[in-house]
Image 1 (cartoon, rainbow, N blue to C red):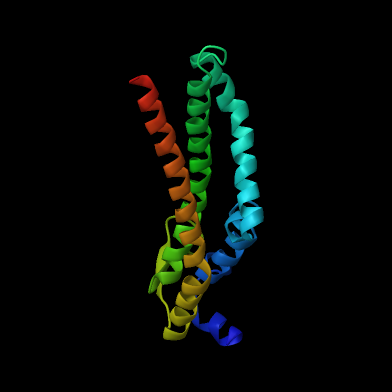
Image 2: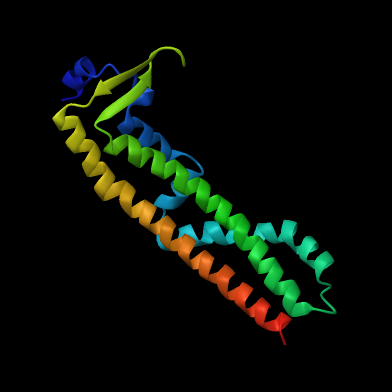
Length: 169
């Protein structure tokens, strides 16, 4: 099928959805979402810890640790979660782009530059292959990122609710 596929498909190799998927899966940053649960959470934990270097001094300036320790911790938690949220957003957008390309019946591609875009209609075999990759490889990754974002949102929400309760005492 490889030989016949190259003859049928005019899309340059680096712009074919299945090759874009392989490149994304092997990239330094986007491969995080493909890791087993423990290494995945460890990577996000490192981002969360390193973001304390940025957020900690801001939270300490806003809420001195000696006077308002709980507000300092809550504001730092929200700030670090927002940074991790930006990392998750970037992961999600990259994988969502690939899911769109794999799911599409047509592939937009450029032969030599932005001015000569073309559209290629996928053959039924290519469409089935791409959608199988989408179903079994990419969709679980997107679900994992969404669940992680939900955990992060609940942490931000509970910290904000606790903050609100402390302010109104």
